[in-house]
Length: 441
Image (tube, rainbow, N blue to C red):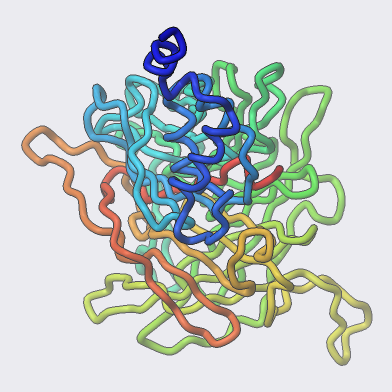
């Protein structure tokens, strides 16, 4: 009798860990990975969130490195507590909780580092949020950003206006892109540096918990296209005015005494990029460039998109990848560093988008090498003179549309495979790659 009552009182949370582990691995394993003992990250998260015993059982399961997730736009309501994330491994969309106040029409995703997302909010300021623990770290408000660019006009040789900077009062600052030197740690969150590009293209940095954004010493008063940390330095790629002009890269070191980013004192202070850029006739042209670390070397990635007669930019159609190496053309007295095109990624796979780029070993993730996964970032255009992320008025609500430019490009045969359409709010921010910390274990 007592044994029967004990059986009736036994609930799923009281099940032995080995039973929970066996049930979890057999019932929630990802279809993408046939091994029954491997759970995809999204399903692991839901399984481990039920109770403490299930969480403990989930932690004992074998782990396979997960492909990055794609964080879609934040909820339009500040009271909504969930956001959508697309898992490449699962080929599924998950709705995961976020801290209260993370959403709203004035909120946008600006970057990520491991499980951390960078949230930029025009009214409530900026902060870091850990997707799985819910922890948040404050970042300085964008009103602490000091503009270097005021009112001005940039003209070509034929006197045609190519850029216009409106008065400062009309240019509300907003963080468009942010990268972290490392993921924040619980014991010392201020150890990491957050570098950010504002909607004007200007470069700023801070540490979590500090009160204001600062400008690196001798930072170019120009528009930064992409930024990344590499070998302990911050590399910033500037926009080129015309496609025939090579972009320029500026390099910064951290001065430990002043806790300031300063222009590098070695020969890498300003790096002129002279790649062998092939002329791309209509209907496609160079759309955007990224800088990314891969196998200890710095790569430059050029993204080409279709052009249309009305001047709009279409889907991605091609990529070019370059790396720096010494060259000595005929007649040149001494060698110099130049950007040379690559035909292969040497077993790596790249992920690029408006929030930055990363490289991973393809074999560790069970995907083909020499491929480039790209996210839709068409709402960030060169030469924008208004905030990239705009706040719609109450009578002009934000609209959602499918992501039209998410896919995979193969360097071996030049093929492009577009992924399924995913709804997101283009007017607030493009999707952001989320690089889960399990990938580094």
